[in-house]
Image (cartoon, rainbow, N blue to C red; front, side):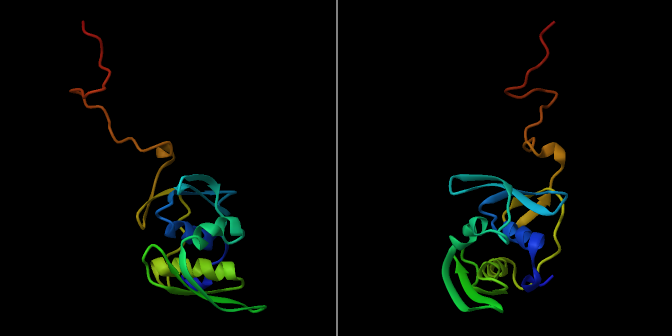
Length: 161
């Protein structure tokens, strides 16, 4: 899918995927029509709907990461911008019906290039730029330290006989 064609949920999803320093989990609400995230952006927790394509409040997390933003055109026909972001990825051009959409597309393009895969409509966790699906059972946290039969520090074992 071309980044220049992303809109709505797909655009919101790929913005969330590009925010791997902020977003730790992506899931969907409203029967899969809205992207929701869990994460922490510079001490500000976020847990809920994430719709940067519809709101500057959500898109501000992208705007705050811009080191250079060159608006080439903004008219009734849309906007074109070139942006460079502080995470060191390449500068990218974005086009859209509004400056917000152009900025979001430039942000995704700076991380993933001109094309991206389809939206993965499953709950997932981000590890760097990679997304991995997680089951509903691990939503509260991944169990990393399972007890062993021979016991570990902190294991509660059966009382002696």
